[in-house]
Image 1 (cartoon, helix red, strand yellow):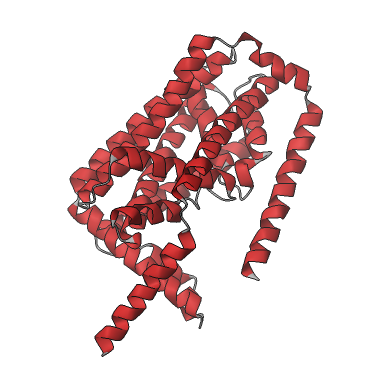
Image 2 (image 1 turned 135 degrees about the vertical axis):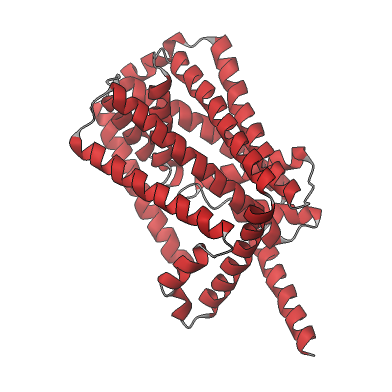
Length: 348
């Protein structure tokens, strides 16, 4: 029943996204959009592909640093493969690029790593990524704001969003460094713990278990944490190169603030609960390009280029997942079954 409701919601949001995409494409000529691709430079395309691959390697390096701080050692090649699989699933499922993490954690069990332990390293990696991305996004908005004038409503929305984000990030790290729960606190604030359901009781126990490991990392692995932040900044530098090459490839002449702004709107688009951000990615790029006075056809052309890149990663990820033949549900069920047996043994 739950699965069918989830599928219906996914189909509804996908239909909304397709409707938005259809509306956008009706407003602009496909011929003019594809004309932007006419001046593709093969050498720049090659460098663009190298930059895309480099980002995947750098982000995997950050995950590797976090894992090694937890005394978990997995061959780097395997981590790259697992990350590609996770990225692939995140792209194909609705939501803010989440969904592939349990699969990554289940793949780590091939190396005798506990599912929860592996998932914790992925959560830490994800939160550090969100932290640096959010801060750099706000820096980009400030830089663009100094150069361009935003509509009053946009300024207010960005300001409120920025303050809320900084507040959440500050609260999260404060609680982690003072050995206090953050996500479990939200769980209790929403009174989810009062629901008399085996599902929510299990979820509460899982949140507490993962968060205790996260607290341990932030308190006792500060060197790895700082190194991870530095790698995140490096990844944004590589990402800047990627999008500078992408815009150059399309004949779009933009500077550092504009690149930050364009990348940030791509990040916002993937937060919407629509598979592959269909329609939302194009709408986001149209909005970003309009605010910095750039051609609308170029905006859609860039969105298509980003989409092609993500689809290629998704295809590679699905092929790799098929090669490993892993089933996430079975791994998780096995873990809980083993835990249940341990509890019964303790009682005896």
